[in-house]
Amino acid sequence: MTDQETLLVLKTERARHAELGDTLDLHIAILEARTAVEIRDWRFEIGDQEARARLARGEPILRADELALDGEALARLFGTICRIAAKYHPEDADAFAELASQPSAVEETARNYLTATGHASRITHHATLANFVVNNVLHPFLAAYARALKPLVDDAAWYRAYCPICGGEPDFAALEKESGARRLLCARCDAEWTFHRALCPFCGEERLGYYPGSEGAYRLYTCGNCRRYLKTIDLRELAREVNLAAERVLTIGMDVTAREAGYR
Image (tube, rainbow, N blue to C red; front, top):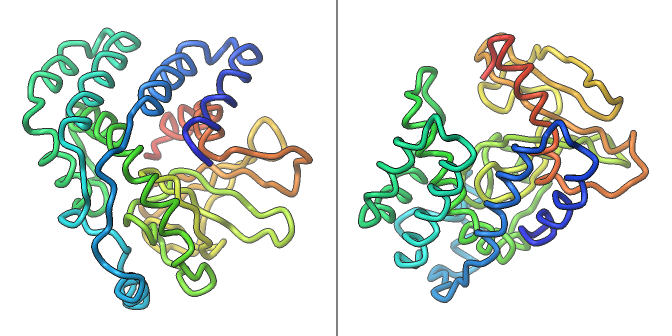
């Protein structure tokens, strides 16, 4: 699953979802910017043995200080994402302009974002906007690592709540077509991994709320303990192929519903 593949899906779905016009246009523009990035400085210094040792210890393979990040490419994409976001969210144009005015701090900001663990229960609006931009700026780099390092991950042995590649949290999930097992989608690098179906991936709570979506294949799982939610698609209900990264955008209505109910 690449950005190019996700972009093609969203462009196809654009004509079928007029109610999501601005949302889809925003994400299409961002994906076009991300796919235009040429990653020239791609390398990973540690060997397969050390990568597997980290996984065995419950650590993600990637560490922020070991990533090869093209600072120039990061800064260019950072400015582009800020301009796109400001276009579609003019009420936050000043905040995005302020972010874009600090290109020299992009690489440090990106590494700080990667080393942060979890999300505070109360986060400022400005920090939310910054995280949105940084997440999109880092994606082409992290996704390249994820595709290359995926063969090192023993999916049956990981079963942790965070991504085995970059340590990110999930923001979407799927129930597998054959087994019904739950696979999580990383919000940062789009890696997928299997996790316990009955547990909250954010706090470990065993009693989850469940709300069916307007279409039978979609579900919204909520946690009364940490007040988080996770959108899920049941692949057993579908005959078509599914691009999970596209589904996270196409199901934006479920995000609105969850947040209006007090979940985050």
